[in-house]
Length: 124
Image (spheres, rainbow, N blue to C red):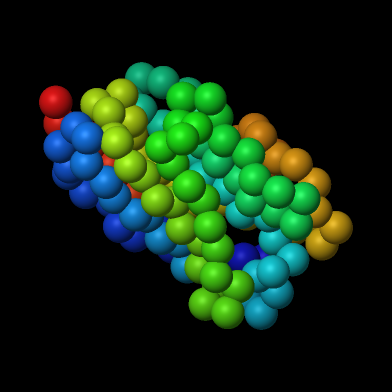
């Protein structure tokens, strides 16, 4: 099992940038596919990005603006968000799925472990 703790959310103006971090517990972080999802008020949770041994995936609305990365030595996954838009406002959740042999994950429901979320607010 893995525990996840997000940080780095906040208030930013449109066009600005933020970097979210997610610290994971456990000694086998490299065996997990990691992802980010978000949920805006009144909307369903939406997949944003994922990273595994097989590669990375992004939802279309963030391609070219968001970058997912990880540091296995620090048990941390990041989401670098640039050119933020008001419609990016949401609670952002870090997620993990045990995936020793890789795999491509592009839906929130595919992940098994979740953090508590961090609020990102983009003002116009």
